[in-house]
Each structure stands twice: as C-alpha cells, then as structure tokens.
Image 1 (spheres, rainbow, N blue to C red):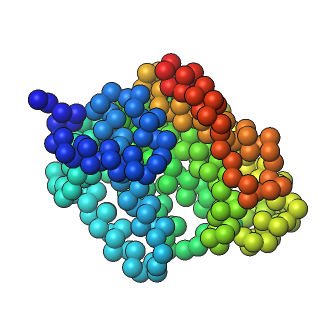
Image 2: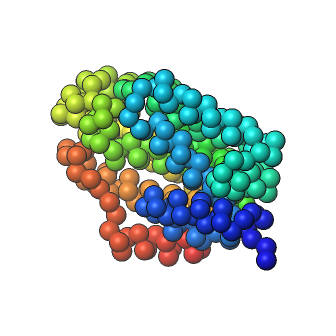
Amino acid sequence: MSTPLGVASADLAAVAALVRRSGTSFYHGMRVLPPERRAAMYAIYAFCRRVDDIADEPGAFAAKLPQLAAWRARVSGLYRGAADNAETRVLRAAVQRFGLREADFLAVIDGMQMDAEQVIVAPDLATLDLYCDRVAAAVGRLSVRAFGDASPAADEVAHALGRALQLTNILRDVAEDAARGRLYLPGEYLAEAGVPADPAAALASPALPEVCARLAALARQYFDAAAAAMRCCDRRAMRPARLMAARYAAILSALQRRGWQQPAARLSLPVWRKLWIVLRHGLA
C-alpha cells in the first residue's frame, strides 16, 4: 500500500505525533491539506520545533552551537539524499516532492542562532526585519511550496505574512519576553517615544502603548500586503495561509482593542471565534 510521500508509515506517525504533542493548533489547522502536503508541513514544523528548542533551552551559546551545526549538516544531507531519523526521512521526501529550498531551511537555523547567541533587546528595525525574515518568512517560503504554490506571488505572501505573524507574536508576548530579559520592540520606536531600552523598565513605561500601537500598525500593513499577494496565487493552495492570516489578524485586532496598558495579561481568542475563522477561511 502506498503512503504519503512514499515514506514509511512509522516515520509519518512519529512526525505527526511530535506535532500533536507540541499542543499547537497547527496540528489541526494543517489537516485541511491533502495527505502528502500535510505530511510535508508536519515535517517542516518538526524541523522548526527542534531547532527552536535548541535556541530556547537553558545554557551557554557555546553548548548550543554544535547542535545547530548538526542540523545544518542534516539539512545539507537532505539534498544529497541522506537522512538519519523519522523527521529527516519525511523532510527528504518533501524536499524531493515539492522543491523545498535549502537556503530557507538554513535561514530558519540562522534565525534561531540569533536568539541563541545573544539576548535580543531593542533591535534596530533592520535587525528586527532580518530576524522576522529568518524565523517566520523563511518558514513561509517552505510552507507555500508544500501548500502547492511556488510562484513569485507565493513568496511575496511568505515575505509579508511571515512578518505580520511574527510582529503579532512579539506584541502578544511583550511581558513574557521581558520576564526572560528580552525586548523585541524596535529601538527606534522606543527612543522616539522616550521608552527605556530595558525590558523591565519598558514594561513599566507609560509610553509603552504608543510603541506597541505603532508596531501593530506595521503588522497590519503586512497583513494587507499578504492579502493582496494571495489574490495572485492559487486560491486552493493558499487555504492554510488564509487560515493563519485570519487567526493572527484576529489576535492583533483583539490586542489593539485591549491596548497595552496591562501587557502581562495573556490574550487568546474565544472558541467561537476560532471556529468561525476555520469555517470561513479554512473551508473556502
């Protein structure tokens, strides 16, 4: 019996289980895809999960560098037909089937390395944009190919939507990141608003909402740019992208309505709102 991507059922099950155990809504969101594309997306997520865990785990950067280097070697091996575990075996098949690009996998690792080798505090706009490109847009460039659209317009979707999603994450997690000594809000915005470029001090600043509102406006511009690019793409292939865009745009809207006077209050969408998004965008 044939299996998605022609890989062993045990490998497919192991990758799906890793995604499911992560507790992410991504697991259910990707179920709108046909089996081969879904398997590819689960493998892409598993890869991102592995390298993200390396960056986030406690310990010195020197101890993390060999682990990131090992993943660089695994990625290089995919393009020579090599694989050493369930995740890389499914990834190897996805690379061959959907033309996933080595540079995009390596960009993701570069982004995780940025987080691992330094505590990011008030980056300038250029550095923040590079970070967003590596940790989010590069994932998007892999994803749109797995979705079924490798056109230049699909790469434009990845460029804009990746930034929109990552900026929304930054705005949602301001307090959580500050507790870890991190501050991803751009240094230029902080300086112009008179907000200290220090995580704890920024959190207590009365001008913090001004900075967050400005970054939210930038995220909204990226959502709009992604929507415009999607209109030039294969509509069916962009279903998962529309679903992710709708969900995160709803989170951004909720953040904007609430404001950032109490950034420590964690925000999540009500169940009815999530269901409405799936019905409207996931099934279209």
